[in-house]
Every structure is written in structure tokens, then in C-alpha cells.
Amino acid sequence: MTIHLDHTIVPAHDKLASARQLAELLGVPWAAEGGGPFSAVYVNEGMTLDFIQTDEDFPAYHFCFRVSQAEFDAILARIQAAGIAYRSSVRGPDDRQVNTAWGGNNIYWNEPEGHQWEMLTVSYPRPGR
Image 1: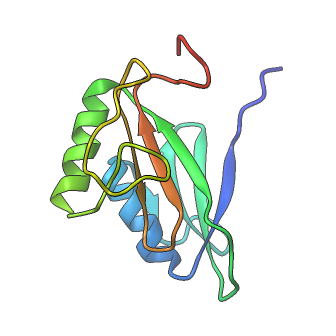
Image 2 (image 1 turned 90 degrees about the vertical axis):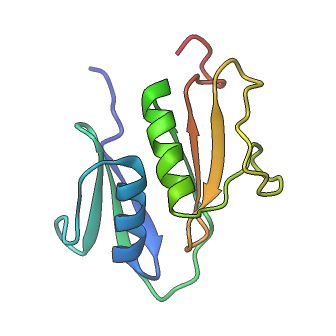
């Protein structure tokens, strides 16, 4: 049996705004009520990010999305059109640059809740993918 990650829970103080923003940037569907107490972002046919509303403090999570070059260009254009700051390094300044050091393109950005998103075209942790 192959193991696939089906979904994960993402804490948010405003689950609707967080889910909507990510879905719009990625160009994927989402549901305000995705089952139970969640706002779901349907990343692909096998992976859902379930945003849950909380008043508690939570750590910033990091999620990385591997996409094709065409998808990268389209998502980056939506990030730029929305005026969202992005950067070429995981902890660096918002330099609005694309990192090409790993044999593809990648960027990082933070959403209003503090979670960090990464988008890349070539997997540097798993070369050849």
C-alpha cells in the first residue's frame, strides 16, 4: 500500500479569510464549510488543507507546494497582483525575487495568520522530482 497524506489541519484565527486567500492564490477550489468545523482548501484530488478556527495561540506552520513551471508563473502572478510580499529565502527579507539556486524556481510568503507557504518547481529535498 502506498501511503498518501490525505489532509492536515491548519489553525487560523480567521479560517474563512485564510482558506479563501490560499485557494485563490493557488487557483484551486475551497469550501467555507468543508465538513465538520473546517474551511477546506482542495489542493489536489488527494490532499486537503482543513483550516480550523481557534482563539488559541499556535505556531507558524510551513507548507511547500511543488508545481509545474506554468503553474508557478500563474500563482506568482496572482501573488504579485494581490500585493503580497514574497522572498527568495526561507528566513530572508521580502526581496520579491525568485530563488533559482536549486535547479528550478522557488519562493516563500507568509499569510496573515503567520503560516509560511513555499512554492517550487523542483524538489530540492527529493532531487529528480
